Image (cartoon, rainbow, N blue to C red; front, side):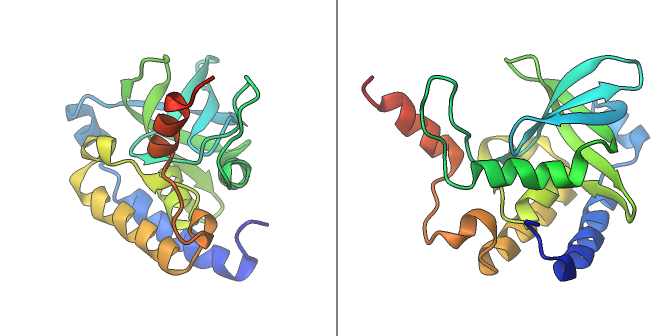
Length: 190
């Protein structure tokens, strides 16, 4: 397993606390969020999943305010270290489980972007928080303002704890955030 069993219970409990920080449906509705429920049927990478909604529609979901290591491209390019482990970590939390997406927007790729609360045996766990706390994502500063104010500090604390404990990407002394990695890849000659 990516997360040792003895630490899993504590992490799930902290994830429950993060999920409790999600605004209630009525408050989220005022913020123009849409609640979508379903089952997670595929995990594409460390921040993108596919959900089969209760209405029978397959949708792509992008976790808001985090960025996970980039996987290898279909064009034969190399991915970032820890990309596959980030995908597996998210799959361990969410695959074949019920979840509620607090969708706030659609991105340019047609993905539903928002906060994803995954139903676990211990209660709901915020998938973005989970990836940060286990060290398999960075806070994405460009989109941090899109999540509720009270969650920003929860996300910052989760990332800081993972970094302090040298989890996931933080095993490297100076890991490259995905947005910088993508910029460098775009600048490389073909």
